[in-house]
Image (tube, helix red, strand yellow):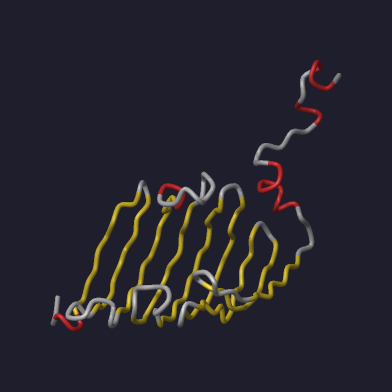
Length: 171
């Protein structure tokens, strides 16, 4: 709704059992010259949209992006990503907040604050979005226990000795 130079768009999408709500503004006279979108995701199974993600990957959160350009080498945009109660395969994603910028083929992570399986992660950096661009990132990890990473390393099933049969425990 609105003029073509600042067309308001909104949508509510079913996403393989999840839901995505989208609101934004786009210049349709010159596609890619300006856009601003806010998306909210509820139980979106990310692995159904990208084979690069492990099975069980699920996103609950939001993404806000404003910028211009749609090609990675010419894009000039800023974004804020938030996730909570999500998963990357077997790894529980408690929270993620990231503030990002993209310009001239480089994505700059101004800040990343996350908790994955009880491990606190923070960082920032610059990374190339296409070859031959490169970059560097600094990540800091801290935790009192690596137990929260167990699903990532060993799977979700906990096998305790008292749950094994006599034959299994005799091995």
